[in-house]
Length: 327
Ligand code: GLV
Image (cartoon, rainbow, N blue to C red; front, side):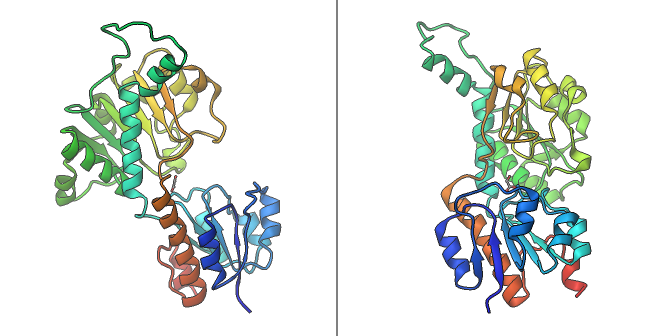
């Protein structure tokens, strides 16, 4: 009998077909958004689950699903997993790193440029039929080239953004991270390590690329925004909750900073209503990794992890390898 797995959201048909060669697959191509108890019901008897980043895997769900062995996230972020509870229950978690690094860095730059050059705001103006003449100060924004790019969180995606800024746009790149990069990687990225206060004070454009955790919750709030330059822009492609969205909306309205670009939101897909009414913010629906080849690569990596662990005992990107050594 083939091991049973659940694919918890709609996914590329070729991924379902691929997994179907190895497993007894239940899929959710109608993309029903299951409640935690519905997910738990669907998981009865399943050895593995393919998750997409929004499904909460916690102690209560794990207790109700005693035969579950692996949760394979099709996302690099895994704040939907309670990893301690998974380790305690002997359930492996895997994520999908690396395959989305360059695509997400491209998008970070797209959002940065749209924000600094007021692309969305000016497009709305044109569509509304308000463009009747040229004016010297119409939608004047700030330069990218030659400016100081600040990066908070210098993992793989942060480094890829730094390389684009330093080598593509001649930016001065500064970063802050829990740990400093080695000299060779700093040189490759063209980036200089600074403290968080200096980062906030010096950056013309600040991009957030750090993982969400209790310690990064509201890492950017009213106090931090007040330390930034009035002409600065802020881009968040990391996770909702890292920015205090209510404080940001107020800072945008008061011109504490010039503009922001947000791909992620606290409590998404809900968006703080104040962000919807300020003009100087570009809003996108969590699409940082959304190209066809990258989403396919992410899904294939999640599938590789299910196949690798359940059939060969060799997951590719385990998050809690303690589960492997504990058996
Ligand atoms: C996207 O946000 C991811 O974590 O892959």
